[in-house]
Structures are given as C-alpha cells and as structure tokens.
Image 1 (spheres, rainbow, N blue to C red):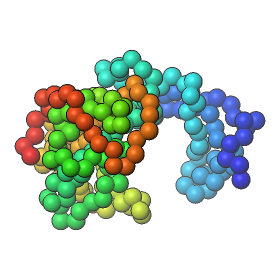
Image 2 (tube, rainbow, N blue to C red):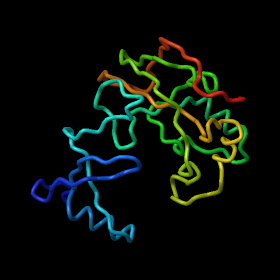
Image 3 (tube, rainbow, N blue to C red):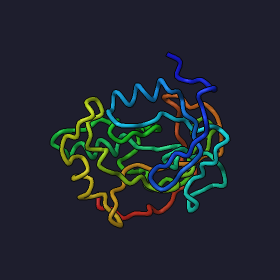
Length: 198
C-alpha cells in the first residue's frame, strides 16, 4: 500500500508531553493498520519541514532543529553503559536508552563534563543530561516490561533533583554526514551540572 498520498492529508495538531505542533497524516490505510494492530484509535502523522518545533527556550541555540522529543541528538558513552551493566545482575543492551550518538573509548560518564565537541567538522553543544524514565525497563525486542531495572540501579547513583540522569542531549547548527568510526574532539569542558558518586 502507499503510505503517503497528498490528497488524503489535512493539517492537524499533534500534542505530546509538554507541547504541540502542526502535523500531516500519512494515509488512511496506515491509520487503519495501526488501529487494528494496537486496538486503539490512533493516526500516523509526520512533522512537515515548515512546522515550528523549537527546543525548550532555556536550551535553545536560536535554531529550529528539534523534533518531538525536544532535542535531535542524544549521546551516550559505551563506558557509561559498561559501568551500569557491571552493577546489574542482568546486563541491558544499548537500545534500552535509544541514543543516536554512541561514543567509544571514553571513561564512564566522561560525557557529563563535555560542553562542546566536534565530529567530522560538525560542532555539537551539550545542553543538558537526559533524564530517564520507565521506558528503559521495557525489553525492546518483545515490548514487555521486564522489571525495575536498569532504572532502580541508576537511581542509586545517578539521581539529582529527583531525576535520573544518563546520557546527554546535544544541539548543533551544522549539517553534514557522520559515519561509524568518526573521531570525536572535545573542544570545551564544563563542570557537570549534576553531582554524582560514581
């Protein structure tokens, strides 16, 4: 089936978490497929390029780059994940945290102190840590919530201001291509905004 037909689309407002924005339906067929699969009324939509979808004002760099989750880049160090998994009875895969930038070769939680970095001539700015939720307790292959881990363990040593921090959100004004194996260069450090006992 064709998932996109302009004749079937009329702009609507999509709401999520703390905001809303203009969105366009994909197709009636897509809606019916998801409704039958999920057994709830729902619609599949996408955000057009001209839709305003700014980041949280406190962290904005003056650009219009964010997606529904407020930040387009989510960075996590493999060292941080390894540190967590050593504390767990049952290690969890990287997919539980859904990062799109994964850094190898850095000590655990080194990303807490990164402020500005470059990857393949693209400059990124760390804007705040990523606060974790119960989604991390859901097995990504089965969709079933397993138990309270890894959130319970993270809570014991990565909690600040009643939130559990793991990974970093980034913004960038640049465009370019990133590839697996690209070098990461740290240009500027910062004092970690949170204080943890690693």
